[in-house]
Length: 127
Image (cartoon, rainbow, N blue to C red; front, side, top):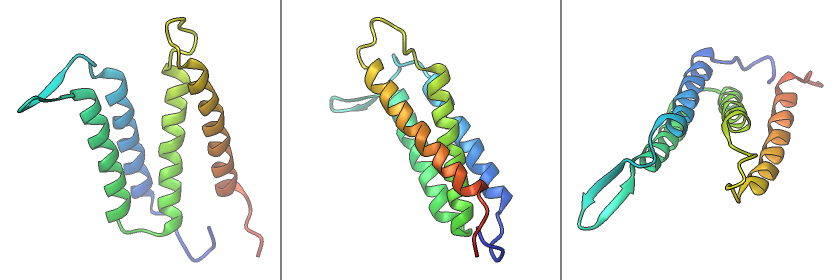
């Protein structure tokens, strides 16, 4: 970020709070709860909260006016929180989990992306 743009700390902190709340939807909402919309339409409450939470995060970053650097920093912080939560809470060693290998591969790729994004923010600008 160059010297003319300043980071709006409020947007970044708001994004971090929204990211933590979104991760809590994955952790603490029971997958057995359902929403019955009628006419045979049934949806998992957990999936509904995850989708609505993601739409709230996207809308927050679209409609909260700030510099592009602030938006990128906020989204990088949310990606970091999500990635760390996946690394900490996902059951990689569960023998019944058939997708553990694929999730592990994508965890490595996302970890690389997180590192590259933070290097961008912590690197010195060359003028």
